[in-house]
Length: 147
Image (cartoon, rainbow, N blue to C red):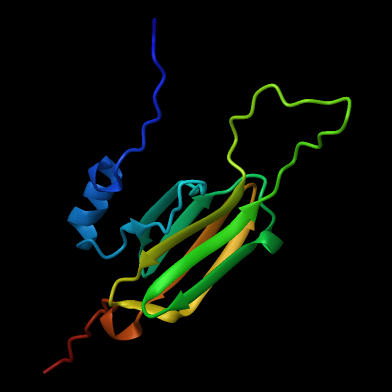
């Protein structure tokens, strides 16, 4: 007989978090404000040139149900996936594997991120949040003057 148990993996042992921690010095590791009944969308965090990019898989969530804020050096994304199954007297749900309800993710921004330059887009169930790096820390080419 097989016993089913619930497994809640620890974020700090996630291989992706270890890679991000190694390259970005722990500054963009996701810190979720989760309660036992909440869910958190999966995310990808990476640098693309002069921009930090955070992508969230949130199929079934409309942009009107998403809130993005920056406060105290933290970027927070929260929202709600509403129940899409209508149940009446003559209907029943036999199996439900998709998450629904409220979600919240919070990320500490790196010190070189410009919190005033946050932009977001939502397409095909993916939320993309882009944060520009500050001008003074971007690499720039130095011209050499003729002597």
